[in-house]
Length: 504
Image 1 (cartoon, rainbow, N blue to C red):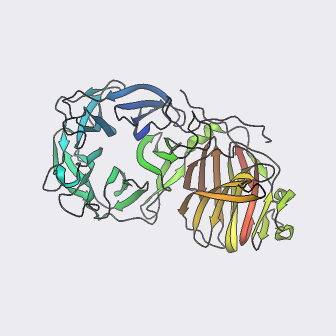
Image 2 (cartoon, one colour):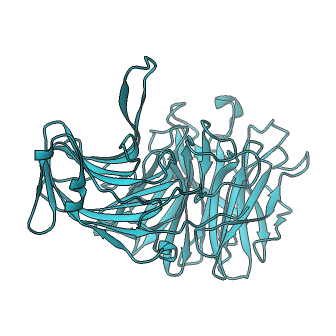
Image 3 (spheres, rainbow, N blue to C red):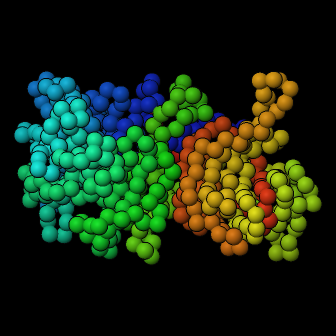
């Protein structure tokens, strides 16, 4: 489908308002077919925002859930990360959240509770706080660090009806910058808790923020955000007693795809998270400033080793626009940059490129929002990939680069621009996201690129590897790329999309 110039469509979600950097840590829960998003509101931490979605993609903001309390309350200064869960035996929802009081100038973190019958009207528990850091397992000395970590609660119940809470904490002893742990407590009613030894204390991190837990077939997966770094790690175990070990892919998504929260919806486990990005698109004057956005969800499945992996959200089918189109691999030979003799048509309809240096073979069709799928086999050499949303001169585009030497998948902003000398144009493919990938030469690889609005997602053999936001190149052509390599490309199937517009 040939495309005309496309307007800007905000596919990712940020809370409405003048400041695009308001989205803080999140929690999600499904009720009666509706997904509810609760989030911190930055920078004040004075309100928990609330939005709803019926399809997992389009969000509508509604009235906030709770606000900071009075001067003498445990949450009188700030509210930090929360978790909402359904009571296992009553038609009631519990919101466990972090409260910081004015009495200690916000330096002591405690766990508080609010309840609701419908997820819209909330009432704070009269005996807040319900849990705080205490020895012998956890630090309660304010002077030791200058603040007491005890935040970001995550609550679940087991098959025996026992409640469990995980909390960001620090051990009572240990090195100042390596005593972060995941605290653990249990309860019979979700209100009165007994502190236990840490669930996970690796003596490796300062704080293990926003912990969350998944269970599947007797196997557990623990996720936590590395304090001030931006990586969200995974650890797996056969019981809550551990040992908690890194799976083959301990990073399911690249840096700054963080704060993992999950909800069950239509028989699937959805992962939501925030994505830190430096916008290169015109969103409410945000250009050039960092902001947190809520990207579309991913679906969680489990591999044969009992570790979680991510698949693309099946709800994208509701955004399909018309029928998928096939761009024959040979059609990319209409425009070639680099050596023309590098490219050979193969009888099965594929195209093979073998180059010293880099060569591009482009197609003339232009697309804006799409899911593109193709097969790739790199027989030898360094790297190959796909340029997409490229302008006619192939000077501005996105570049998916698969590095078979370093076994990395990379997403670049491909930009050819005038230098400060005003005499030359310099090729500037700028890397802005990457992740290790099990790339193997002489093995077929299924590649899937979703580009919708500012959101870009890359799957290799059906597993999500990249999740990014950029709008510098919003529509254009495709091109095959070889880089000091011999590679065979199969035909490209392109499914046009209608972007899911946000409300508010």
